[in-house]
Length: 468
Image 1 (cartoon, rainbow, N blue to C red):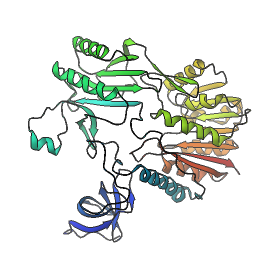
Image 2: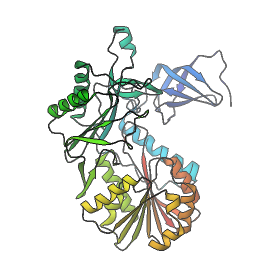
Image 3: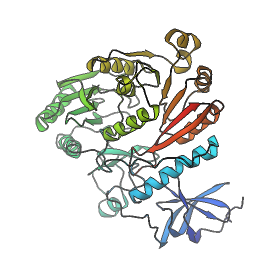
């Protein structure tokens, strides 16, 4: 592979042909791949080289020679600095096209299967304000933009917002975010302003000191609202004053909670959650089912599109009503409860015990009596004795994390030989890796990508495999 000579700093008229996961455009100099910040497939650009590696280079656009047909003006003031929505400068039609391509490329290259029958990607019902959960971070080390530095060197350094990419200790202060519906922006800005007025300290991510640490906001399609304020080293008076302010300022809050977290990391799964007012949960609905969502519960963050994803999963399975279904990586049992009314029995398995408790509660809440849930590591639970004791499944639904399934689990699926496997994935590459092994006994009958997260590179994919 040809190297770029050390003296070359600029390259003219580079054609951008693809887009990488990080939102960078992909071009070439002879045979060398170059990742270009904020470039769009179809652009022709002059570039300035930033870093040169052995097998690739990184660059930024110095001049847009010819804009792509997919290029559009970003609608968020924080685009390019904030770590989210990295594809916002591409039209939504363009995003869908390249997400579909990323899925078919992975399945073709890694699984080596025919993807010509892949169905069209399902667009998201909403492309803005589609998330039901956001987590913000308080910091006393605000990220200063170039404009901040030029206009005001003495800018306020306390911030409430998102991490700047590759900088764990720097937080971009967010004015308006287009990911979650109102009153999300008002809640964040009001709490930040209250803390500044009352001299309540923001967290120091390096030295681990300060009162206010995180803010989590959860909403539901039923109109319910959960606000969680996470404190670190706050006095009882600071906690009381802050929570009273939130309660009075947002009386519509269904669940107002707080956490005292003095650990070195932000995770709350091992923390006690205290109820300041209201319930300790909110309710979500999907196709007549009610789901209880607590502060630690997992629920797909795009509620409307989650329904579409699960509907495609159920459609691919083509249930007749008498099936025994295994739901692997069941989480809070959302898929299990969603399909339970259409089958004889569902057995869900999940690693996280608290998620299994949520799954059982959700079954009880909906009067569903044909679900059974087990907690444990999948490779240790899904053993021959388990299958012998519960019966061979007619359909296996598997929705693993981004890393895909453990090799032992893939081998177990080959041994079980269920007539159908419906594989839901948020990472087409690891899905393709697993399918490459499963195709020893299975053919891929249907493929359909689903866009859950507009303006990002992420895409879900549903694959139906049938026993040969």
